[in-house]
Image (tube, rainbow, N blue to C red):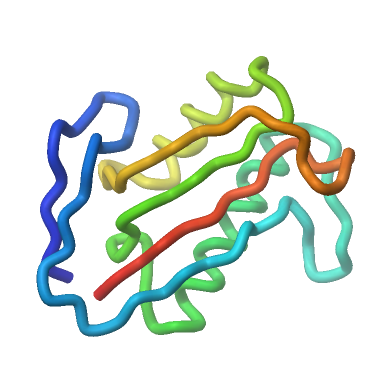
Length: 122
């Protein structure tokens, strides 16, 4: 993909991401921390990894991967998950830095502690 990031931050995101001449766009709905049976683990760390895995699964279904992410929005159920969220995001993205917004809010299902939506382009 042809894209450039601006003002890359140490916390695995950039202030902006410019996509030049994309071939395809993929808009990934909020991926919940649930498995194929609809179950969500209790621990935030497990939920966060599962939600990221679900994002990766949607990317793969479109023939894309984490390198194609240009924008990510993470919804957290509570501020206390900020650092764990950063740690896991940093681990998953492994040096990639899409544009990012983190929002602390009430999430659709009270059992969910995190939800992740994304935009990808190639």
